[in-house]
Image 1 (cartoon, rainbow, N blue to C red):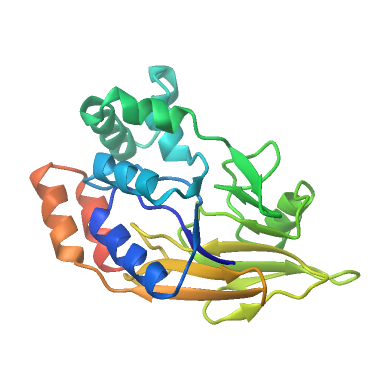
Image 2 (image 1 turned 60 degrees about the vertical axis):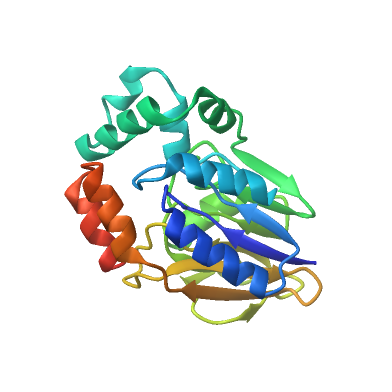
Length: 244
């Protein structure tokens, strides 16, 4: 079975459509979303609709939780620009979308692997970026393979028996060793942060155990123009062109 893995769509419909086309061209049969369908971008409703139409297994992202959580005391702790965007999304999304977001699980075990947005364990919105955080995550990972998001960067973390863990950017195809425990981050669809503005995703073949990263061009300027029309925060608009 070939899986298409994507996440951190962040309301960027143009980026998602480009990724969706690439994953279908690659022959993917099932799809997994590592969370954060909403946040930052100008078309959260359209992205929710499209992700739901794909039938992807989807988990809750932190921005999805912000949108679905109606307790404003939680919002008060957020960055002012993020708060502005979340409040706008709450005001524009239909209640059906908010209910769908609120019903997403924090993590899922399916087809022999795990899906989570941040990391497994009590610090579920933690970032896995180094061997220390990778080990903290692995302490709760029961399956050999786990997919996550949250950092907006393609990352491959691996631990073989009796060897120290390693973590690096996912820049080329990798075959997962049969005795390894791995964490795979496909990178960000709607707001990449690895200094590559192209939308990111990856494929996973459960037979060959190959993970293959994919980067695709999309109309960044069109998304930026929509964000300007909606008066969304300038720094969220500008960063799209630089992938950071």
